[in-house]
Length: 433
Image (cartoon, rainbow, N blue to C red; front, side, top):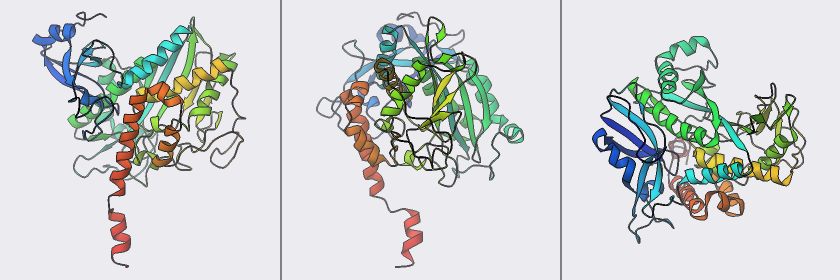
């Protein structure tokens, strides 16, 4: 739609509109319906600082926005059709895009990094489809702990116990044009997984940003705190974000060859395999996120691949031609989906254009078996920063300033953690030295 053509549902008095920030967290404003036409035509002003703050809203000097230039304004415009919020009568909800005062895209907007790769694929006559699986915990908002004490993965009994909140998440978010395929209890007390139906890459990333926001709203309405934090409990399963890729042309899945992964699919996989250690920062942005990346956690530790194998980084799923795809399993649920998908697609398209071939597949325990050419993935944030700093690939995908800001945030997180004395240290050392 063009500016001014975004119609509000009948009875709307307020529009909640926001876009994904540096971490893919929705930031925006609530707008009276009486002001909606003006917003559609002229945008809604917001500081560019929205795209440079961390998850706690701390701000610092960045190459694009800083205290010298005064953190100037940009404008938000609707980019999805406003839909009624079922649990908040009279309120509509939509995603925004960011536009500079010069009426050009904001260079540090992570969404634009993905748009560039989508347009690159389109120029080749290709459409990249992505399905998303995301995990989160539902915890008590006061204790910050699960209300359950045991693990009941896939249990229908536990699913029924969680239905008071997971039911509305499935049904009501589905009504908001984010098609939910299923939900299930995951491998941690209070942990759930939701699958969002595949769509083109940009739509899938947009939906994931909106979904996380809406889940947190719905959880609060039902007396829970929802968290997509990568590793909220050291002795429990982490929250992962799995992405399922296929590439289509003229209505045909190019990854499929009579139900098997095609040469094109293998080349896409090879491109991702070659680069994924280099851009690990895109899928895990905090020290906590790397607590997931440990052996035997169902989070990969090597850039390996295999057929229907959940111990590897790239899991090939075969079957009907429409279902053949590659699942990438290393990212954390709290990452920015725009940057993650942009890096995955850029690497995969490089693989296709260069005719790359992957290593041998892993036919067993991906944590134990070493295969030539399968690089280890960074096991901590410092290692991921080092790989990103040495990359010539990442500045091209994220933009030089975008990458700089993401790395600035990562270093700040490292410094923050380095300047803490934890309860574990006090418990272990204070009485013994």
